[in-house]
Amino acid sequence: MLIFKTVNELSRYLQTLKRAGRRIGFVPTMGALHAGHLSLVKTALGENDFCIVSIFVNPAQFNDPADLNRYPRTFERDLELLLSEGCHALFFPEVEEIYPAHLDIRVDVSFGFLFQTMEALHRPGHFEGVVKAVKRLLDIVEPHNLYMGQKDYQQFLIVQRMIEALHLPVRLVLCPTVREPDGLALSSRNQLLSPQEREAARQISRTLFQAAEKLKQGLPLDSIRAESVNDLKKEPLLQPEYFEIANAVTLRPLQEAETTGGIIICTAVKAGTVRLIDNVMIA
Ligand code: AMP
Image (cartoon, rainbow, N blue to C red):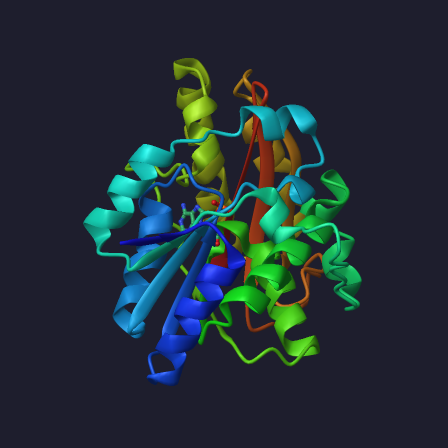
């Protein structure tokens, strides 16, 4: 596996590949890799000639410095996992490579309601940081295909909107959420959970799946929301921040009589001091 630390080296190498007609699949990550990330890598390997993963813990998207400081960093293990998947290249830049002082990275896109709900409200500045990093990484890698997980569904919609608005020549692929056997969505932050918090965190996906069932049965939206928040609060170690049943395209709260292409149920829950997000989509 090739490892690139600088933009120049990487660009030069990728240009040669592109001139030779190779298709490039790109998986941006913040490292501390797990089977969720690797499922994206597998899909990218299956659909492209060349798969490149980036590991960049993006300071711009952390609204809480303590969260940035304790974000897990497991580089040696990440390398082993990528090697065993057969990933072709890793981009592992320093912050200065992504945000050089002379470069003013602006993403002049209006995200509308996507920037006014759920994660955007609870993590001010977070998505501004995400779009800045993703735009810069796309400018550097210029992949044919970009792979992102449903686990971060709002992030996916925002990146989709950016790609459309800026006419970026990349195809965005949404990959399903990979879960632990008890339903907990895999997340790098799961390693920060105490055994008791880990046990309590099972309730997050359970509540989401139960809400999806109730929705299919036609129960009123307000009572589903209220019961779900109550179910989460029954676990003393869990503190729900939001629980939203929304239109899967606009993220606007679902209305009772709404007939729509898709519904997404999203939640953010603190387990102790660890903030976890998850969602379930209903077609
Ligand atoms: P992160 O390293 O958390 O920034 O995630 C990098 C990419 O992996 C994002 O597109 C995430 O949505 C995706 N991802 C994270 N966890 C999972 C999961 N459990 N299943 C599928 N994709 C995931």
